[in-house]
Image (tube, rainbow, N blue to C red; front, side, top):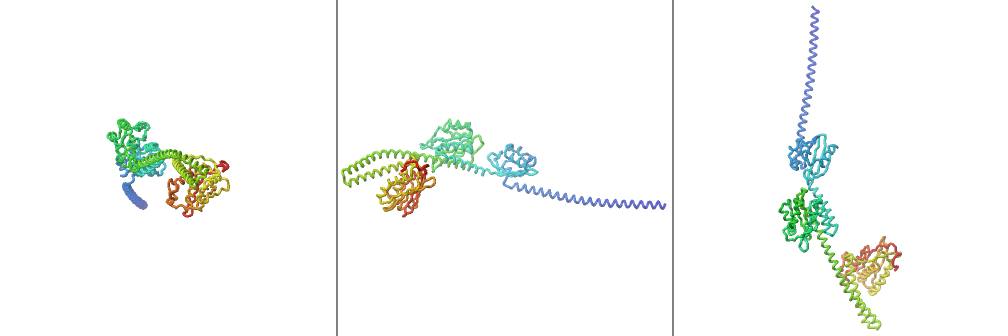
Length: 583
């Protein structure tokens, strides 16, 4: 029995120990689970805080994106809209609720295949930001600068309207090209035709120019259309002049000198544009939708009208288009006015040249008789030993006739120079021969005035490519001018030296000199300085410049008052100094 009791006590003790161990394990497990639960609670708290922070950050970012002046939208990896700000809604006129969950291609079908489509896909494929400018496929005529930023979650896109800047840049490029065309020729009808063709590649579908003629008629001088199929229609309108008092809007703009904007061309406006029924038929066939008529104004006078018109392009003119059109019209008007003035000047020059030729011919005939009879009288008086006083009278007549002959020659030369018709025959001329001939011709005149005239001949043989008679005339003009302003006992020196591909000549005098304020005017036709008196015509130096420049040379002057003047000029070197007359 004692053993049995002892066994039961032992069993009871072991059971107690086992229960105690289980209880301890249970407590440990509960502690671990409690720690895990607390850790989970802390993690959940952090996650809730992070989610709240993310929601707050997202809301704050959304609030910021709502306030920015740029348009903004976001796409997920499946290219679906997840956000669009208010500026996006304003620009495109679409509520964001319409867009969320849709792709750009679904919301805006016009963007499929566009530069926007290509650039967005490139950004996502390369996972690199892209920046570009392009015309909106959805809003033609509107240009955007776009920045697209890819991420693993999708694409964020910022964009803003740069239409005004783009319009200004395009306008400047257009006007620069138009200016180049207008300056390319003085045939204004040709240049206006080029400008109208340029206009239909830019701000117009159809462009034409009407000019007011001197007789008061209005003539269409240029027209162009962007559609070659309609070009022939517009050309039919070139040959029907109208009058300023007719009730057309072109005549109205000519009379008022004010720009006329036609945002929409309706039947009434179309009738006002038509000069006659046939033109009305053609204008209807052109299907005009909008127009802009701008006066061509030059020197305060309205001389024509530039018309820009739109038809099938969808373009509608508004006030923003007026500055470009008016600047184009201003430049065209200046070109037309300059060309007309040039044409008038050329006509006047030709008329003057013709008159001078007729007059000179009519004057030279009696002058020839004067020369002949004066020479005959001198010869007779010398043979008969006539009175010296009588000989002096005849010599005076001879000198006056010679002076008149030189004046006629100078007038013809200056006219020919201005018209670019001066005749000369260049050849290889020895420089020393030219100087010797000039001295032989001018020494008597210098001696008569008591002036020493000398020449410094070149040490080495030199030759120039020149017309001998014209260069002798040049020396006569320069030396004659020097003699006129050099006092008795003064000196005049001719010199020459090589200067590369040119030969440098100079005529230096010890005369009164030329005031600095007179130097810029010396070579102007008919100009005479204050101290020059009435002697001379004011043509000699102008002709000298023309002769030098006609030979491809240069002419200039250096002078000091009270010291004297030196006239310099250059002539091109002849290929071989051995050719030509050896004098």
